[in-house]
Every structure is written in C-alpha cells, then in structure tokens.
Length: 398
Ligand code: DP6
Image (cartoon, rainbow, N blue to C red; front, side, top):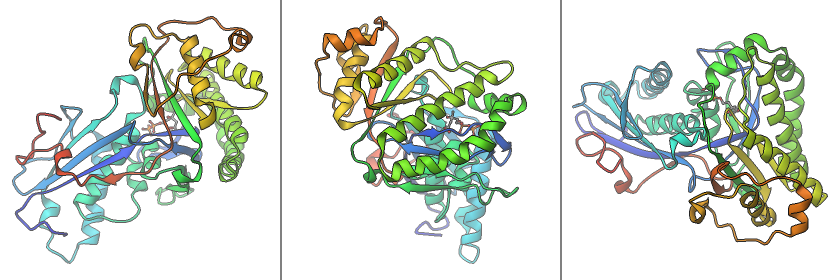
C-alpha cells in the first residue's frame, strides 16, 4: 500500500464532472454488468459549474463501510455501490498482493456532495459514481483503467472519467471487459463551444432511466432498429464532426439523436414522456432561431427529464440567452436567472422576436447554468475541502 501504515487513517478527496450525451445510451444487454446495446458519445461539462466532490477515508478503527450523500447517510448495501466497492477492492488486492495489505481489509467511509441542487434533475448519478470510483481507487492505490468499474455504478458514469469529448464503446464480450469509455478529444480542442443548461420547473418526477430503458428494451422495436442500424453510423459521423469542429454537423446529429431517443420512449409500451411543454417550446425556439439566422447556431438535447442542454458557439451565447429570457421571463429570481460563466445582456430586435412567432411563457424555467466543456476528475489537494473530519464522520459544513 502507499503511505498509509497498518493502523493509520488514509483520506482522499476528489471531484468529478457531469457529462451530457450527444449520442444517447438507452438500453442494456446485461443489467448486472451494465452493458449497453449501443455505443454513445458525450461532452464533459466544466466542474466549476457542475461537479460532485467525494472524500473517502479508510481506517482500522472503522467498524463498517458507510456512505453519506448530500448530508444524509444512505444504505451502503445498494447493489451498484457494492459492485463498485467490490471491484476496486479486487483491483487493489491484485496490485498489492505481495505488500502489507492491512489497509485493504479496512472499512471505508465515503462522503459525497454536489455543487448543484440534486432536485434540479441534472444527471447526478454519472458524476457521483465517477467520483466514487476515482476517489476509492486513489485511496486504495489502484491506478489505470477505471471506466469498466464506474460503468457498473451507472452506465453513463464511465464517460465522466474523462474530460472533453468521450465515447463509450459498447464492446462485444459477455464479461464486459471491452465495454469502456475513451476520450475522443480534450476540452481544449473546441474552445468556442459553449453550453447552457436550461433547468425546467419540473412538476412531476419522471420515470428513472434504469427502469425506463428496461421497458424500452422489452417493448420498443424502434429502439432495436436505432441500436443496430442508426447509432453505429452516427458515432462515426459525430466523431468526424467533433474532429473538424463542424458546429452545423455536430448540432444536427445532436438534435436528431435526442429526438430519436425520445421517439423510442414514445414507442415504449406503455409510453414514457420526458419532454414537457417547456421542452417542446425550447425545441421550437431553437429551430426557428436557426432558420431565422439562416445557419445552425444552436442545438438542444434532452435526457430522461424536461431540462434542455443547449450547445452553441461563444459568439451566439448572449443573443440566444436573451431570447430564452424573453420567451421564458423569470418570475422572481431575475438577478440569479443566469448562473455560471458570464453572459452579457444583449438587445434582441423586434423583428427577431416577431419572426419567431412564440408566446412568452412565465414560470417555465427555474434558471440557466452557463458552462462549457471541461476536464475529467481530479484530486482535491486542499485539506479544507475534505468532507470527512478527523473522526471519519461528515464535517458539519458538508
Ligand atoms: C438518457 O446511466 O442513468 O441520460 O446505467 O441504468 O444507471 P443506468 O442509466 P443512466 O442512463 C443515462 C441515460 C441518458 C442518456 C445518456 O446519458 O447517454
């Protein structure tokens, strides 16, 4: 083992990003190992705006493995949590078989928080499991490939172990050893690319992705067609669009793939509806704005909920954000409506507003997070950021 002796405690704190798929993962061929029916591709979002921070502590003094999420103790026996713990411990034993392995039998305390409201319905399980696996690996001295472990926490989590543009290759093997995530291009590859997360005011809890995709696999023939015949070509085209920084091609593929994912949800029996009225209006706004501009300036994508993630280029952020504010006027929190990277107020011409032919809809959006592609997980060296106190329990501030 590294520096920790047989009877000391060892604490590591790490942070990991959220990712948003532009070619969606939907459907498993193996529920236990979390093996997908198609490959997928995502953009990792910047941790300054959206991240999970996790502290992991091992100690001879701990009597049991324990976990706290956003200030509340959760059941450590959750099967996917157990898969990740078991896998990292197995890798640690393999790596340190001939060394003093006392710390490998130590129990672990895990404490994790998000820097964004969990209730906002932003994919927090991807950042959460990526961070858990990354921090556990550091604490137990495991190096190298971890995406195959994070995948077993939540499929999309494997993509959060890399920054920039990331593909999750579905793989062919039954044991899942070739179902891994790889970076396609780093975040620095496309500096002009910007992201706006439009957080819709949700009025109901949608069907979770795990059970939603199970029903889709069982009942949707469109999903099978998509996985077998559509996604392979789209993966190639998307990687090409990213490598050429071709925004129009990237945007069209992103929107089409989001739409096809939601079409497979509609083709699921009974059908699943993730898009709300607000989502549908954002779709109209994007298409009408692109057509008014006579070029593709903006793209949308939606996961298993009504929030829109908008991709655009730096030079269009201010105008598009002003349009969103015009058509979804904030009710009370006008001052904090746009959070994150600066967005400058922009004048929108009457001609543009009129031409879009949409009625403003108040209370539709709660707020906007302005961000960009960002790096993968990192170790947090600042000890004041550690979420566990010297007694191995969550600090009061956590
Ligand atoms: C619509 O990774 O949350 O966001 O593997 O069952 O944990 P499990 O599902 P999850 O599904 C994500 C689905 C999606 C598309 C995507 O991120 O690719």
